[in-house]
Image 1: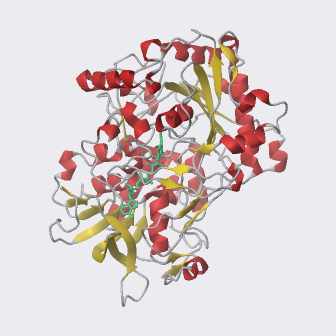
Image 2: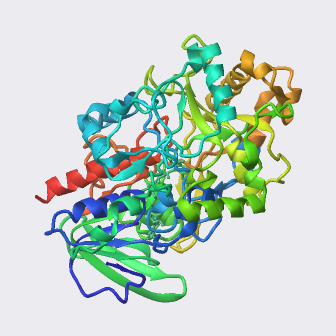
Image 3: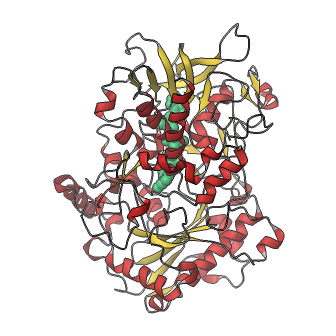
Length: 589
Ligand SMILES: Cc1cc2nc3c(=O)[nH]c(=O)nc-3n(C[C@H](O)[C@H](O)[C@H](O)COP(=O)(O)OP(=O)(O)OC[C@H]3O[C@@H](n4cnc5c(N)ncnc54)[C@H](O)[C@@H]3O)c2cc1C
């Protein structure tokens, strides 16, 4: 069952305490309680997801960042972004970031996972060995409007039996879709049509897939793994609105053992301690997990001592290696009537249309709100092997099947979301085609550190974007690729030109300050408690995700990725959590 206060849950003993009922935490809770002998407690800082309309209706996604369902973090100011700091949303409700994210469903390249296997020495993390977990994770369904998906997806690479409903968007944009597809035909090569970029071979342009079901609702880790049936299990207790401050070592143990969780609230000095008989599993995400570890005295000794935090374990890897994708919005003006999106064209800017869309969704799950934004295609491209960039820099990608750059093709996601949030002035109303560019094979690495010893104070988040010139040069290549894409014959008659400061550039170098002034996070932080081989003197967890030099403590979330995949990060997290559930089951069989 689900409670909203730690003081109300029945007295009990737990085998496993899971910190964070987010993407990974919900999967673990659902899978571990399949064994009726395992008693599991999930502690989630945010509220229950049930009945949260903004999270249920795909079209309301833009209202989630900066809301009560977001931790509302801000990064420190970054040199690489001309001294700017940027908003850093993280989900704060059951389902975690999967309940507030953009629902894009991407797996990345096979070599992303093969690289994890190689650097950790554990073949279990390879693409081939993770396939059974994809089958358990995904439930591919028809789109909400039941349109034919022939030629939009390769059914052979999808599973109909897993937990999380996934589909092609159920509200398409025929006018801009036709233009995008025609451009892929005309240009071929780097922009060739890829029937299914979720095959492990993403390169090319293909149809968007999203964590949205046939019923037109968002699927999250909580809706998929913490179903009413699962919540009714006697061996599962979920407590929401409850914040973990630290994990604590067992006093008197012969070697370092961490099985106790401290719960607190900023309004009271009282703390509740709970102990798991088997394991505490940290699933608080790439920000929450290192934050809790550092508060607990597990981290870099020098940094901890500077804040007078008693050192429980010196491990400088905690909070390091923060890796994220970075995006740059690129929009092109359209000639009047060039792309006609019909009566919904101005949806994101017109409150009357939004009310109408919500009503349609509520009445019979139709209309534009069964999907997120007017984007139906993503493109994945590589910087060519003979690029002079590689004379200067090592290739950061995991292999020839992996992308350096992602292009979001349709209407500008970033600009639209900004406008809805009123972060930017809502001037870019309608009438433009977008090829937003994401640099998804970054060389830059950032960090997460503590600001103070107060566990309720936000951490110092430094994604260190564009620290490496490699990332700037590849972003340039992304922009140039976008310009080549809109140079397709079909685009020529439609587009008036690139909007914004890029319109005035005369050289490649001119792009750099524009990139630094305009780029923003893709909201995909990973790597802050990286896995490494058993016995390696770097990293935080071993390939079984157990915290090194500690017994009783495991980490299962985005923080354990040693390298960021060239994919939006929810699917990789789902795979990590599905495999981790088996690792835990095997360990305690
Ligand atoms: C706005 C946004 C858009 C995104 N868009 C996409 C997308 O379209 N496609 C995609 O694939 N990925 C996307 N992502 C990324 C993806 O959602 C995340 O990488 C993934 O969900 C992370 O899973 P996780 O389990 O590591 O962490 P989370 O899902 O964030 O879970 C962590 C949980 O722990 C809880 N928690 C944290 N600290 C504590 C504490 N001290 N005590 C108790 N509980 C705690 C949190 O509240 C949260 O519920 C997006 C992310 C965001 C924020």
